Image 1 (tube, rainbow, N blue to C red):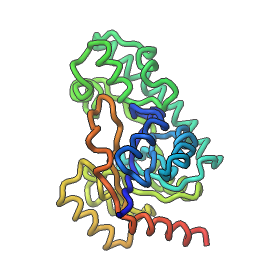
Image 2 (cartoon, rainbow, N blue to C red):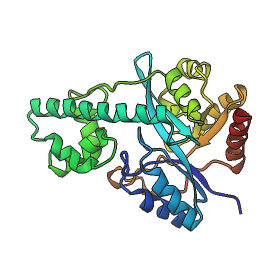
Image 3 (spheres, one colour):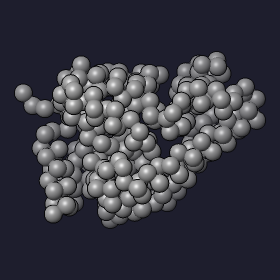
Length: 276
């Protein structure tokens, strides 16, 4: 029986609904053998997840999802096999954790200016110790009865073109790929379905190692297209469910969006080549 491998999921340390322990147990329950937790701008849940995974027979690859900016377009990169104790990586994560909080405060103030009764404390109740983001604001808005559901928050208020939108501070893709490489990891363009082909080529030139081919948002045609790009440019292929749980209502995704053992072996071979 082939290994089941899902390399994209989130915990309560970013915008997921489950703790690292809960998520690893869920992964085991649906038959996953190898996973990667790729929280936004946070590696704080990885040691817990890796310890639990070791106990129950699920390999947890240390991962991370980083926001970058290219031509004023937000691009997410996935990092795998990183050294989570790397000093420069930790400095980056600390800086962006602070910037996420400042951004959340600006969004909350815009919502209040629109007449919505919400405070940063309401948002922090949902964020707890995680890297704060718009999903936490959306969840707070639902719980306060300001909107009917999670997605309405983005559609009406905090989405990229909403009246309460605030841009993040980003690093360039080149800086992010160097950060990931210096931390011993591999970098991938996350869920590129929203990225123009010209930008995709620019990112490849910036030195990324691969592309997330398998993702719930990708159609069969898109999967074939990105797989063709991977083959054309001799890149690596990755993928997963991008599972969050909770109000995202994506519970059916876990265990259904998988990469092959050959994809994972190619990643390991690249790491070995880089360290040689």
